Image 1 (cartoon, rainbow, N blue to C red):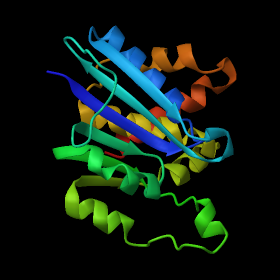
Image 2 (image 1 turned 60 degrees about the vertical axis):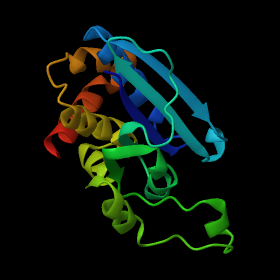
Image 3 (image 1 turned 90 degrees about the vertical axis):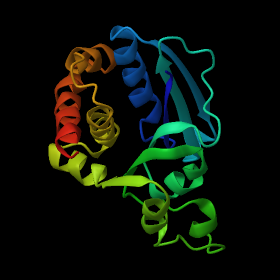
Image 4 (image 1 turned 90 degrees about the horizontal axis):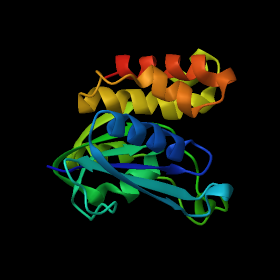
Length: 189
């Protein structure tokens, strides 16, 4: 049976790195894994999404609407934007961070304060303050790895050597803080 994990965020949040670490761990666990990434003006704070599918045999990296087992959102508005991709009985992990998109910044729109309520009404939702947790560790940029740790715990894949996979994928100066961020994320779920 194929499982689908959709990771979404805004450019610069580390969505793709988290997806690569997740994919490598799943490969090392013996799964067939396909990953697809979409950069929508990611350099300028635009939307970024990655599709990770794994199982005995995966034929396509693309997650269709209403078929994601887990939606991992690095920002609230992105969670709502991608909600229709979560299947019935699926789950969402949402970082409670708000990043105002351009229409909000120029006053043409307002950022809804009801996003988390809308999410919880439609899908089992776990809300985390990954940004604050990462800041407590000394680097708010590791919020992606905090979210990854929470996702791994939710998926029940804690028996993979994630510490080694993290050290294989980040610069040596940042290995320790990323491993701490991963453990932090696991402890939040």
